[in-house]
Image 1 (cartoon, rainbow, N blue to C red):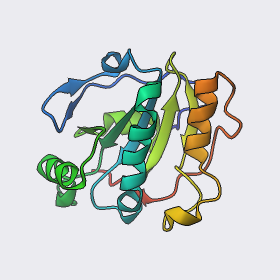
Image 2: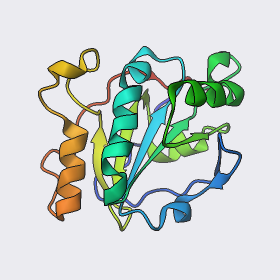
Image 3: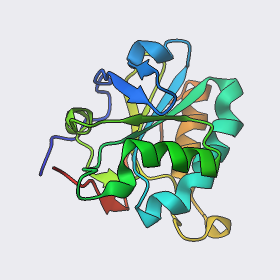
Image 4: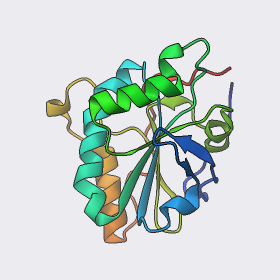
Length: 179
């Protein structure tokens, strides 16, 4: 399935999804946040699993600066039961997720964003314009050997009010499992 990926400068498509906390979220839920990071994610992908602690650390490190991390699981949970809502709740609890984790049952949000992989990142500024798309850093397997932390660099630049110097990288990971 090929969807049109959002272009840099695009407005964030709205969403209306249920979180693992039982609440529903839309873009207005994050109006107080100066930076919004949408990560298309899941439970079973080894790339996502390798990045989970780094995502937790991002939320910890930038929360005071107004960052909200929102992970969205759009995977088909019939053929991939590990990605079911109940298993999302279990994984978030066992891993200590400190960010919002939402379920996109219809896969419409993933299609609206043009997401193709897990993890795939969409970073938005205060006006909810897309300023960065792609991956977290240049070494998914060994955090200690990261040379270029693309996402952290982009967040720092947004917080300084300057254009993101590397607005796009290619997403690495598993493909979204379409119904």
